[in-house]
Length: 291
Image (tube, rainbow, N blue to C red; front, side, top):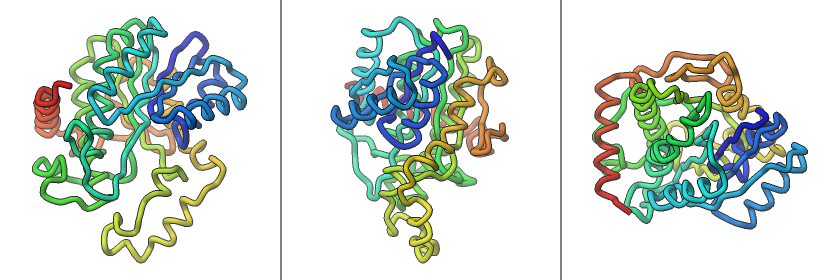
């Protein structure tokens, strides 16, 4: 990964930070994003120390908004002249329905809109790389059906189930994007990292779980208790694989599981009608929010 530049969103902690450490150890220049200067600077210092690589940069940005992503891209382009890999690691699992400053439901804004919009804004830089790669993380099992009538939880918001819907929506959107940019040589792939102890999983409440699963909440909390980054390091393997492996060079529209195995894309995400509907919806939504 020497002479490669990697941008990782939401990498001041958890899986993103562990991904950054591993890629830095491999010699990449790693750019992480975060919303807080103090936690961001601490993460940069830790990544430098643990990897022995001084080429770590921090960019402050709020990826829940269109303006925040445009600002992030502007900052990046002021410092670098190309990009090899972008890893959409930032995610949201809100406990209640709330809106971004753009007026978009927060899970949808961060889990669906942000990965795609960031990739589109960086496409000219990714095309400068001989192997430009876009990687997006999903989370947990996804539903068998994509609820096109509830993309922003206007009908119902039920915690983890809606979070899973947002990740399925993201998969459909990014899989469609993979088809549309095949001729560019830039690849678009998705990975599932597996369960890990992170600030997001630790913030899950019993009320976010489906009713029948709530008695198991103590077990869930035990599984995601702080472990010094061990589970997050393990969970970073699928991201690192897609970012570095020559086995997937030039291959697009892949789905890699937590065991770093290439699996079939969930049917609801691969379905062409679902993909087109989500694609059109997202484009209309961004047009309606010009900021």
